[in-house]
Image (cartoon, rainbow over all chains, first blue to last red; front, side, top):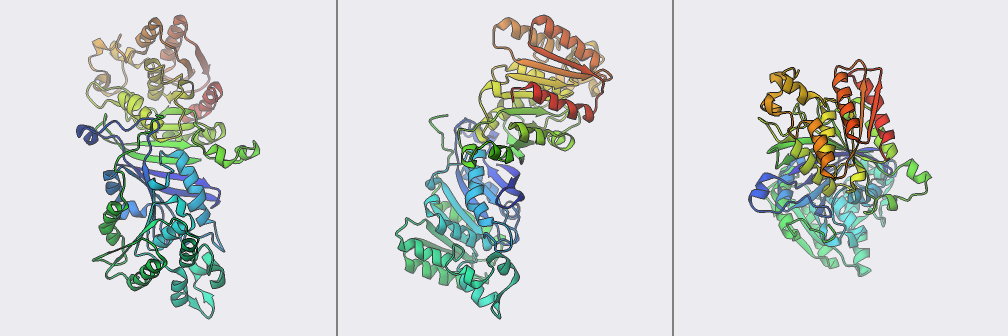
Amino acid sequence: MAIIDLTFRSAALGYNTTVTVCFPENNGSDRRTGKPYRYKPGVKYQVLWLLTGGGGDSSEWVRLTNIERYAAEKNLIVITPATFLSLYTDMYYGEKHFTYLTEELPRVMRWMLPISDKREDNFIAGFSMGGYGAFKSAFAYPERFAAAGSFGGALDMVSIVKSTHLHDGVLDRDFLLAFGSLENLEHSVNDDMYMAEKQMKAAKDMPKLFISVGKDDFTYSRNVETRDKLVDLGYDVTWDTGEGTHSYEYCDSRIRVFLEWAGLKGTPIYNTEG
Amino acid sequence: MARLQIHMESEILRFTTQVDIAIPEYGFAERRAGVSPEEYYSEKNKLPVMFLYHGGTGTCSDWFRFSRIEELSEEKKFIVVCPTAQNSCYTNMAYGPRWFDFISIELYDMVHSMFPASTDPAGNFAVGLSMGGYGALKSALTYPEKYGYGAAMSSAAYIPQEVALGICPLPDGGKSIFGDPDKVLGSDNDLFALAERLKASGRVLPKLYSACGTEDFTFEGNVKFKNHMLDLGYDFTWVQDPGSHTWDYWNDHIKMVCDWLPL
């Protein structure tokens, strides 16, 4: 497995940002086990867009879990952007992180890297705030993703804000900077449950969902409620849990289950035009 | 400007190595020229590639840290690929890794498979300084069907000749790299012989460029190489000017190389 630390100047963000990419490279053990040479022009790979928790930079998933190894097993390219404190949002006071994530990043990455742009080859998942980011992306752009996964996700943002981050009508700082106000958040693209309902009612073909949370994760009961709401809306939801807390350690223990569930091809896609 | 720092295992080297790459992004120039982001970032947009080699004691990040190459590549819209070659002279070492095969076969294939790089030899350049200059000339003379252009600055083109004469300044006289000094001349590591054989073969020839400062310790060897190549009838651009074996020289001359290349 190989790893790329990629820095580029994002127009949406207005500054240089980092992206960490794992890709399966040609190596001796592959060849000794009879696998074909993979460096052919035109080869493509399935891709997992993998989002960090709040405050994260692009390095967290690869440093704190074994995702690089798991991805290599599946011949999958994994792309982990940075989010810092943006809540994957086009911030009210700040940069356009959702535009970055859903428009600019895929456009640039699809050109720079041999990743498939077909829905069946694109998956998105994340930890904590990244779970919210992943589901939000999947609800907003269902035609782009075959499946989405959330690990200890901050799902149902309006409920989270109303119960914990609203005092005297004013949002706590990170949420204020991201959303501006509760009114702005509700019924917007950032209101994940609103989007989930709206898109399902519009009879869109929605991605299948994987909701995973550790038994001792403080977000456990909210994840149960969100699961139930999504099932009631008609979503194909797979529930997953295990020992663990709100941590990358938990993510590491469950991400392989997610990869199996996602139904990956497991091989590079050799293009006939190569 | 996107900068990619890669750690990757090589089947040929049998260990993990580092490669630094720069890929130009859509920017002001494109917008002014009326190109849309969709057009720029389309699968059809393949860019020329400069395989850019560091010198002795250097590493894959040298060119990015010590020269303006990233800016030049952004301006002229080409991909830069800087491998790490340690002190190998970009050679399949007699007692050591097969650096030349890694760089000219596996890395070359990886770049064309993974990134939006042109596969046209007219858009693939081998460029380097000092030991890397020797490597660049060797790449172009060994695989002219892959590299249409080869350019060297303060090149070590004459090192195999020095090894044969027993005056090579490398530690161990260059033995671990080139092997038996009595067998170096005439081998595929001998650029003079390589150029003769390529000319005689009838295969396509690369366009070549060599620049050297008159105070540079490689100057005499480079003049000999230049004369040999002009005698053979190669399209060989020679530049000699005041300067020596310094990053100031290479930083100035990489811009001149970019002006010479079809960019």
